[in-house]
Image (tube, rainbow, N blue to C red):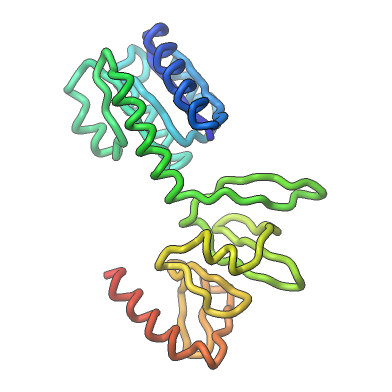
Length: 235
């Protein structure tokens, strides 16, 4: 997990950092925390952050501009805005701010906000182990980015919008991890994200136009019912 703290008051930024790191230690987490008083340094780096604590009003680049760039890199970044001024709150709300903190901040409110943030991350991300050459590498992948999980030749493949990985675990285990209403076990070897279905026929469906998934005869009626219920929920 990558966390950013940016405030042009160095002492204030340090206070936030200490409280965030204390919270993370208490929850047995070891994030990478980058603290800076220079918002331009964030724009020069290409780091993708999961959480960001931003002072809205800074001298050279305001926190709203930094937030826009962070959202461009990762639209699921959680934004915590810290400010002594009220004039920017409407704009910050348009950025889907996760929390606001006034100066001086209340540590207990900070901890409560982090509680909610971790709950959110647990819902929208899944931690997976993938094979990279001969290594076992952990990755955190947004659940919504997963197109399908399939088993083939005794291997399990995870396909996202941007990549395909050889991963670990049976399809039963993956079905438990992705226990949301838009993932469906359409075949004993395929668990698909219905959001990516671009064509549905009685005996098969296509994901992102090109990925064909067969529907066995014994599951065709059940899937048809589920599919139309899914479409109703999407309206």
